[in-house]
Length: 164
Image 1 (cartoon, rainbow, N blue to C red):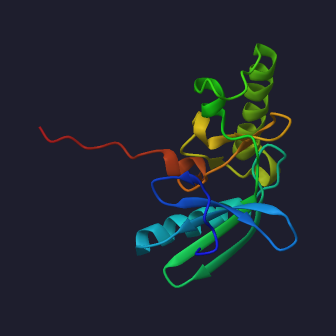
Image 2 (image 1 turned 90 degrees about the horizontal axis):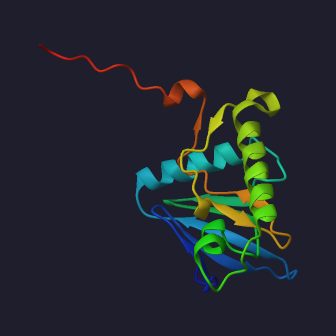
């Protein structure tokens, strides 16, 4: 990560850097480091991201799994996240037509995760405006699947017993 200087995102589990590769391509490099617990979050995100291909979900292009550090490489999406566009006066103001289109495409991507290809039944687990990034045409892409779970039964908690 010493070659990656420009931080483009910081989360609870990782840091995302802008990578400039020798072929002039750009990428978003997500680095998990530290504990075994964080390595499990990395492994989960890697496994989940390898299961789907959808135009409204950011594409995983590579990874590195060495020692206690995990690195995921994603396509770089240039226009920032939806949170910035909705609440930052310096960003492009979205028209209502664009907002409705974004909402529809996000719903389509979530439907794909829940019911789509091969009945994935993936629950994102951290759906929020900052985890929706926009491309150069303001088309949304879901990202950050670190808390995702596979199978709806993983989201159902057993009833707690009460003692009287």
